[in-house]
Image (tube, rainbow, N blue to C red; front, top):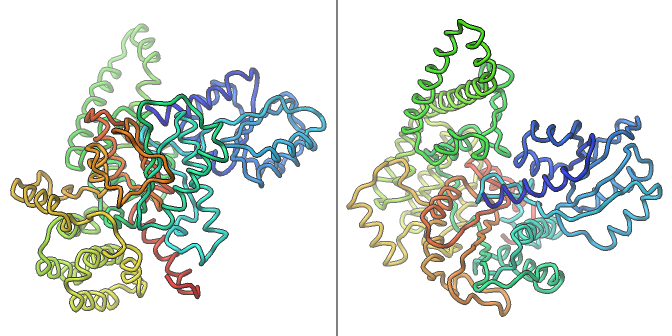
Length: 568
């Protein structure tokens, strides 16, 4: 419960000590942080009757001195500017200012100067500068995520802005956990190194007093790695519930937008998928698609039983019982129809796009050797009219990542076929992914064919057979978790920053993936944490990817790279 409860605790402390009617004022970042941690009904219980955005609150000029304003903002110069203007002519009776990260002294002076009417009651730092989507998974929701693929010289100011935001996010995680970590990074990634070094500078030099928490026997570990070390995971179709919903429909801040899906009642057009608020989802989020169908059938059967018992209302007592249970009944009704809608829609997409066929080949490309068979399978799917353009592109990318060195001639044939079959195919995008994340750029043993131990492990898996052909892939992160658990993470591949080294095995590990995480990886982390290995892992990233977002970032980086004179 670690991250979610840290954020909820901050929001509780913000709201419960201020009595009376309140307006909560957020920015475009903190609105996600609060909406994931707190429901609207919970805000109402804390007497929050209005939620506004800091940059649109100007539109109304009417005074509301009966309301107390609670601001929760990132400490950016734009937000300080908005606040200065709003404090110059205050509309509310009291102002309580909370910031999600470290404030500069100059910012505090600027706010004090602007508060001529002395309406500000308090200014505090509450370190919730991250979106806690699951107990052990957070994201920073960074809009310009493609920046990590470009060398700093291409766009120095945006590159600096990207690094600053990541460092802020990581810092707030450790301030919320009250820890100062030992820091390691992926050796061959410039951006991972830069972020690791800037984080160390903040924690050990600039703000060393703030991070001076009680020493633990073994310091926690922060490991900063680069998405491009495993470009395969975000390209694959997913078959476990949470990951599949994100891949086929999309999840944003634990909400799923279903407005484009036929005629749905208004309360079903946007649904919440949260392991904190939905017991069925919590129990099934990591289950595979086949089992989900069975479990939803059971949920529907239970609901029908309850509905039947509700139909036999004969006495006033029966009616009173029904009214008592009605909110629970209504909630269950909403929950059942939500999951039925999601699974029905995903089944439709799987059938339309022939995803079972496509996914079988994807899994073969990701997990097993056999270049001749792979070439034939990909060629057949490129020729199949039912396969969509995006699926064709992903198949060729996976083939290229796997066999870039082994079969350049056949790779060219697939490039040409893809260009002739897919009108939307962006020329050079497959070559760009190889330039970004090809074999020469990667640290880890992505396909388990570099390291003797991994080759043996893959052979053993092949002999034992795999329980489910669609979920045989394991992200590279799985190997990283294992290496850390066994104390085998190589210093030469993942060096330490500065002269702070790990003594013994850490009990807490935060892994940050620059470029974004996937729900398949957060599942690996959750399962690892459930295995009681004695280490608690937390996973974070700049965004949460699905294949659509990963390809969009690649396209955007390629577009900038083409128009830039710098060498990429």
